[in-house]
Image (tube, rainbow, N blue to C red; front, top):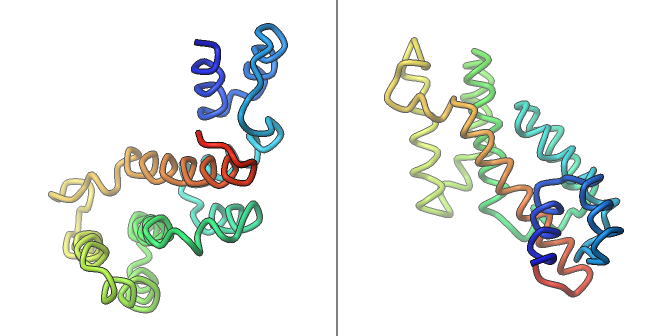
Amino acid sequence: MNKLVMNFLVTEGYVEAAEKFRMESGTEPDIDLATISDRMAVKKAVQCGNVEDAIEKVNDLNPEILDTNPQLFFHLQQQRLIELIRNGKIEEALEFAQEELAPRGEENQTFLEELERTVSLLAFEDVSNCPLGELLDISQRLKTASEVNAAILTSQSHEKGLCV
């Protein structure tokens, strides 16, 4: 039971609580607690819509995370496109979609479908009331942030030879 509680605290980024729980229960976490704040900074950047900053932070932590996980990299880039659309940067969004995401869509049918769905937002003047408006919802950011968080956790536990 203690391992389960510790795993929750580490996964969700509760550094102080994990440290206190470690001291009180004697349960050691599977990863270094010092790495939690770096992971939480990445997660927060995505949740705030600062995707470029998040990508930079992930690469600082471990460049192999995005190199070995094309789906995660695509979802981060897709989130970046969504943020451009959200901010009304239509020209920049189109250029970004063509240069960065379209080549990935050509390689992967799922990516292409997700890209088409995202680019469809550009067809609506009022994107907040369009059928695909959920892409602009905060829940989309949270979903992407959770995916990044899980990938970082996996890479950190593999570095120590453990599984989360």
